[in-house]
Length: 250
Image (tube, rainbow, N blue to C red; front, side, top):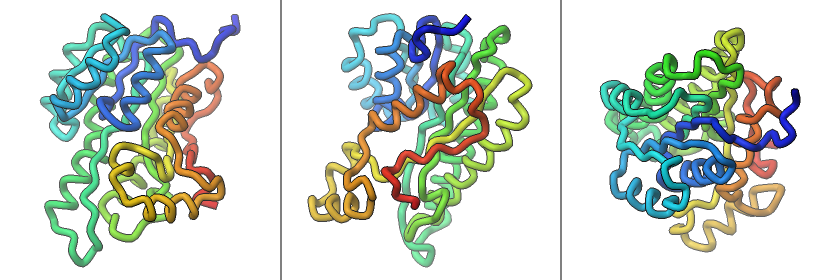
């Protein structure tokens, strides 16, 4: 029987990493508003408290957990605290340590790879046995980046990690499709977040001018794409990379 509202997530449980701020917060908020139970994982206790307060109207459908995705023990501990089997995983946690290759330190490389690439492996591996065994609606959505598609000056570590996310997405889509999963990636372009809002106005204007749509994206643009890929409407979309960038990669 066809679901009359494919963007309703009643009785679905969602885990969003890096979900306490920015894009991740909007993703978590959108799922809660669509009726899902959401477990927000984030490294920052302060950000988690702020998110918990902002989302308090959703009551016991919200869970917040302090998790370092680069540490497997931290992921295992959080997985054990989940209240319900998982239906949807959004791998969003990420950091930047931007420098040109000549100036990039080994520590800069290791930190970004540990969170943005190994962290995604750790979370997906740690939650794999926690997905609902009887569900045919198992979704993994990985947040990559347009720089994983075309590179970017000063982001050797970030671009390499995000390109790796795309490689894992395509591989998992092939391996896990027969197990009831779809696995897809989203490659955001220039998105307006509290971090970008701190940039000078002329820099923001230059960024927007590079985009055919002539604007920066909003966090809701990414959340909407996540909702689509997580829905029944996208049940035949698998191992794909959806660029949400206003045409930046043209």
